[in-house]
Picture: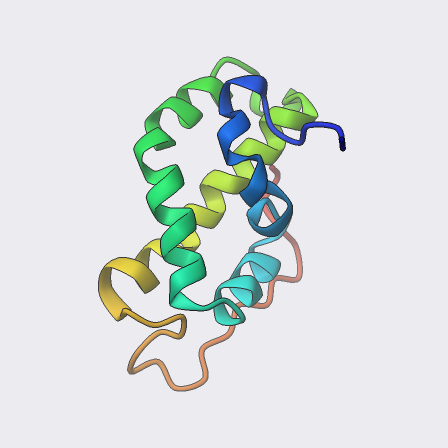
Length: 111
């Protein structure tokens, strides 16, 4: 069995970590655009109820010194934020009425 990517308290979300726990906003946006609504809905439904708990877990550590598993959990939070509009508003991966919207960062905020 592969090493856990997330803190043990979030073990049931491991199946989403490799797919959605991505380091950059650009990668998370690309994942959203290349995912089906069913895939995003499954992730959203599994993680949204644990969102506040995940944030509280990450808040136990200094932001610039997060353990690797907590950092990946934070990236999972960011991914949930990235797909929330697609799920809750657009009902599709791409933003509506946004022409060819892209997210390309030259420098990412850390973490």
